[in-house]
Length: 441
Image (tube, rainbow, N blue to C red):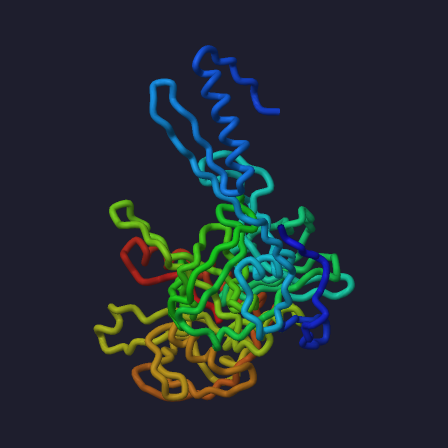
């Protein structure tokens, strides 16, 4: 029995002030008549039930008409009321208290799910989970995974009390698999964020989510199995993750992972599973994005619609093929196209250049280059080592900021390049060449 108030924001949690929002850190069928000896059996059962239960523990006993006796023991326990505990960052809460304290801030995120795990068509199924991170007088912000809402046109969120609202996408960061939604209703309960860096392996953690899209608002628990796991996602993106044996399934993605204080320390994101029927099934390998890794990104998305300060060079890249390396061409990231007016253009990069290092750190391909430059911020100047026309030289490039306009310009550049290279790419693919969809950045 939960004593919860979904729309109450606890008064003892201090908010972090930003320009636009607050994020809180703390009748059964009749039986046929039986004749003969069976009547005595029924009578014996009733007497035993009435007498036994009156004693508290409960004993059900009867004598079979063929002889002998059977005793069934029935226990009893008091009903426990779970109060809405305060998430203050100092008090360790019971699992029941963690669930009660945060259920009102957990949501299901609607998607295009039309069948369940057993092949039946279902309605109002959800494709993922999320949680309310901020709420003011008129609107509320919800965090989920980017892959939960990717390519979904009509987004709706559902609460445990039965309320549902249309949601709009404020912004997202696909590389870090986070997205922020907004609903036009205010003064909702929010979660309290914790410190994911302070976690220890072996600590208890808990999740609220919607496994299989139908078993809504399910509570699961486990341990922190490992920290700082480099996990390669299905699209090739490498992410830093918390590993947990907390039960995670389809539909849990985007939901909150709580520590034993009831604070959100992670965003449930993935589960490792075997892809071959000949392999043993994989159990107890779930992953969550550490909240410290994306806290500032979430704030930036809420305030600006995108992650500010994220660097961009304004170039299309591809990896140098192994075949070319056999002829003395170094491994690196080949420049395929350059955006006019970008930092790369102003810095003197040219199409055909192969970037081999950033500030002295070697890179073997486009992924390495992206990882190296991501350590910097927009406005920083980096020195790129490049291989050009058989010689090695350096160029200094001031990094631009990745934003909505820059992304649109890069999309256009990518389309233009792909159109001009379509015939060549088809020929190379047929011949086993290396051409791939270029990496724009």
